[in-house]
Structures are given as structure tokens and as C-alpha cells.
Image (cartoon, rainbow, N blue to C red; front, side):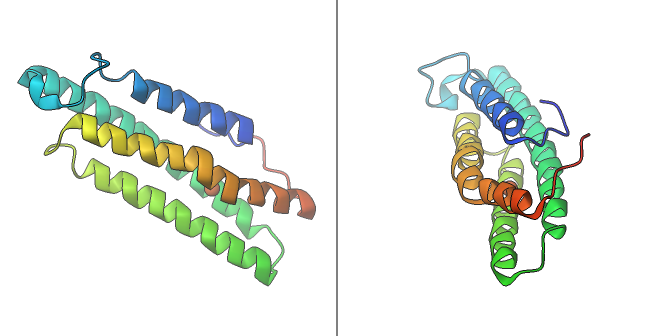
Length: 150
Ligand SMILES: [Fe+2]
């Protein structure tokens, strides 16, 4: 996953790639319970999930920082201000959910944590993009603001 991708298509591609990695993450497709695996494999899976979670947090921190700096360039209008507040609140919620998962890596089934991570990424890719990022893009276009090229 590359940094500094700021177009909607590039962000979507990064999110979709992350979801694909999470789908393929467990070698046993029918696997629903980590207790059936040997301890060494469980440790290996937990380490792999920690890597994906670290990468996800870095990706979202960078992306959200970029979006929130673009929000500051928008005209100071009450409607836009309210939209940006809701947008930033959803960013904070996504980061809080990911951070909470990171704090549970050592004590729970990696499969269950993987499913929660997938749910967070799917929320961002679908609901967040539709409700917040697309509105930000429209507000930027209406204001003549273009994101800086990396
Ligand atoms: Fe956003």
C-alpha cells in the first residue's frame, strides 16, 4: 500500500487491496476458530495480523491527516463546518476502533480480530467514503481547491 494516494480511485484501490489481504490471511478457508490451530501457528497468525493492523493505522493516519488539512482550506460556512465536524468525528471513531483492536492482539482469537478489522475497513471503504469523502470532494471542487500532488 503506497502512501500519499489521495484520489478517490487510488484510496479505494488501497482499501480493496487491504480487504483482499484480510480475506486470504488465514490459510484455512473454513477456519472459524483459532483454538483448533497449534500454538505456533496461532502466534504466527497473530503476528501477521499485527503487521496488517500497523499498516492500516499508518495508512489511515496519513490519509485522515491529508483530508483534514484540506478541510481547513474550505470556506468558513456553517454547513461546510458541520459536515467537516461529522467527517472528523468518523475519522476519530475509525482510529479509535483500530487502536482498540491493537490493544487486544495478545488475548483473543486472531480470526475474530481479523473480522473486526475487516468491518472497520469496509465501513471506511463504503459508508465513510459515500457519506464523508465524496462530500469533501464536492466541496473542494465547488471551492476550486485541488489536492497537492505528492
Ligand atoms: Fe475521510
